[in-house]
Image (cartoon, rainbow, N blue to C red):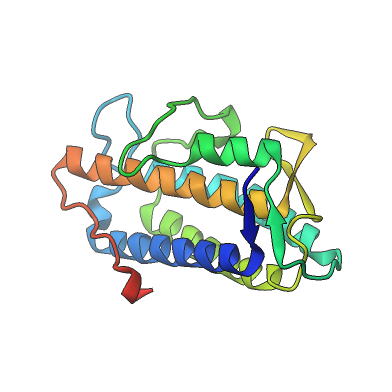
Length: 196
């Protein structure tokens, strides 16, 4: 299993979240397009963001609970077998989504959504996630555990929970880019790392 410098991993994850925040903020300028589905069986951008909101509604409070347990910082984080597997399975490969998978029923968004409200919730969730990543700098992200959404009996290391959650978001931002391209709406520009 991969071994990370805890501080470097958390720093990289914060940069990923900041990039996603910039992308979702840019969506506010094309709000009229966010409920359009590129095909009857394909999600709109608003549905994709609402899907991500449903994961944040579960994982952010669970991460907070985990961080309430005071465990001293460990400079090294070793990924777990399940955490590394789930993260790699979820992460996009460049601008393509590898393994296509069906979403659990409780994470399938309805089609009639208020786009501004959906975006606002996601932005608040991302700011909350950034704050949790900051708090995690003082914790042992290998000792603290978080139950996964599909089974509370399976718990991932906190570091892997962050990796999985953010890889899941990256995956769906590729989907957003693909959806906008199918609709003929200008794709979001990738923020340069110097902008983060």
